Length: 219
Image (tube, rainbow, N blue to C red; front, side):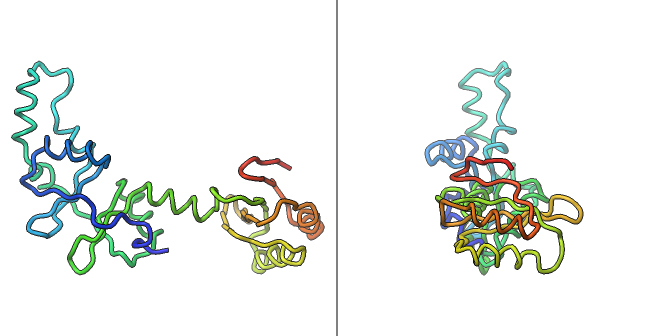
């Protein structure tokens, strides 16, 4: 899956001359937490609601409401982004690359740039949505959690057993949880898995749990 498949295209933007007060109003009105900053069409930064809160006076300040509003209306976005390290990603990058960049840099969003032009923004919520879709969490079906030896051919062995018992696999994921072992999570388009579970266990594969629509039966 590519970044362009999950990003928000044509995000709302501001300029370095936008004030903190204006940026806060835009976020509230559009229910967004991040705003890319464009200067004459070129991406120069991105601000978050957290950035704006950090430059806003503390609620404990002795300033009056009029003084607070005056200060927010005078502070420009350029003051926030001048020391910022801008991180971007291309729309054809893999989604997992975006997730890795966010994790390594402890950020919640990345502007998406193509040929020097801002075309979208990818956020941590988009990554979560992709994970939910990948795991089939919103779809009906039977979920099996298998524990396998981390050896060549084990994945094919499990899938072949399921196929021979008439199981139709809709989603599959592999997790390495401990040395020498892998956890295989498989979602099937069926409601009855008794024969499948029995065949897997007869082949020496540990069926850790069986779940229908997220309600697990630990074995």
